[in-house]
Image (cartoon, rainbow, N blue to C red; front, top):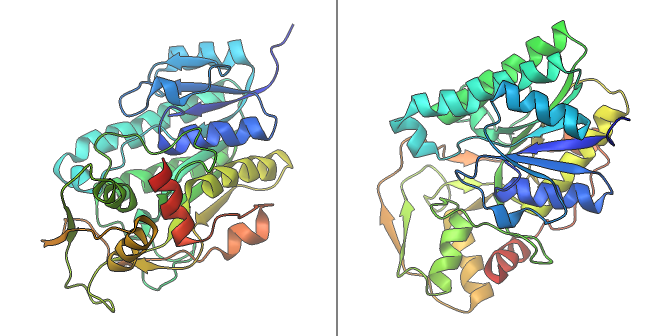
Length: 323
């Protein structure tokens, strides 16, 4: 007897992963989570979802999980995501983000798992040649985080050319907010996400926060980013698997709304939603930060049946604050 088909979510106990597990459950799919709990939390995974503690690059473990759970698709989140840390510890990023991904992709090929969805990043563009950035623009990462993800995209491209294997590489812009039903949220203790930190200041959990650089060539001197609600991003993965399951070709797609907000604008939204004043202090620029990252999201809107619900900065902030 074959086990029912299921979707393996690596890093499914983490921030975006846990939201995506819920999105697949809401869509009626069976899910199994693999996470080493280095950043994730066991209690972020629903009790009725099978959970395996381990590394996404462990070939022997992957073979067991694939067979036991009838895995037909992999959603790969597990990895390291802090840009300044990638500059100071590049080898950690090339191991966690590139080597582990390579092992996972090899296991998929060996076990006949044909559909693969990869968490890539807008950091592959570096300082983009134009804004908004399009998928076919030059990729020139300015930090090891972006470079390690771009290497995995390359592995996917070459693997799909050589094997019966299809992928969707989703380049995330700035992910924020929490599940509107408050089933999960951003719980990483050392998270560097702007909206999370600003929410903690507004809630009295931090005394102040730092704004890294106010001398960028932008209207108010602070960096500009495209913020996407984590629940919309999670649904993009469900849509991506639907796209691949329908037999479509592999694809690289930006995940953003196509609208940018500066650090100061985000802080203004947090102050408005919370009714508090945020003590924000200017600090030096961080290594590896791009001045402006906005998605051209035309491709994902055109190809995927993607239901966008939360394209509103104040709503994103409100869900983060509620969580």
